[in-house]
Length: 360
Image (cartoon, rainbow, N blue to C red; front, side, top):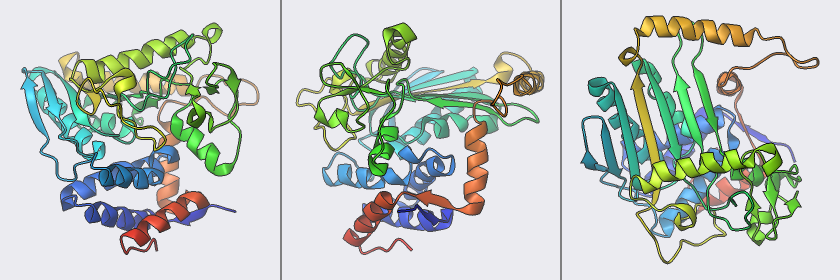
């Protein structure tokens, strides 16, 4: 079966109505929809509308509060801890990033740790909020415990993504957004829908053996840190994932490690939580707190231009700058439409029927 193509407006209308049906206020429904569909536009299909039914499932389980009172519970001139009141991470995260930006305007940098939140979509969306203010944005979050540390068979970490967005002048911004595992769990979900195998190095069995079965985590297996094995640097991916977990949760008072409440349906929340919800961490750094913004952006243009001109390996068309593929995909999909896997379409239609809605 081939993918079905929908316009951004079609998916936007449907998603807005779903968030409205679960009780989100209009402004927050719009915010959540923008964050969610930005993933689809940028080609990160694993974190877009395919996740919509997952948010509804958590809301039905009373794990998501559709009308959260997001608030600062501790702060200094340049830092804050935000309690997300069990809200949609799609809503909590942008609000927390706005606080980081506001603090950076005053103090030069702003740092916000978040507790009591939920899955926040793509990290890149939140980091990119800083760009229009001539700031560098940083976003990270912990996630469902599906990842085994190097040398372990226990699932103790999430895919724990990191995103950094850096403004430039005439060139597009530098935007890096990546999981600290060899592949995000959403990539495995895509393979499951397509009935395809995973590459070696993405996942291991419950006994720690290499596997190509994208369903392995459902049978006790684990995702693998970035690098895939010790000889290829998996200890570095493990360290990155641990760093995100500590900054996002130990610092904020959220759950960390194996206590993180999972987004995936095949895991249940731990009965012995060590904190509140899942955690995020955001940073905003005003460029002119370091050097004049015009000078910085001029040299970022120079940096990007030089790296873009790097001689490619034979058989490769060009060298990419982080953010290039997503930016190009966003322009294409806004013009040509967003393709959805048949299983995602079926899931959305079932979701729509439950609420008396039609995916047009």
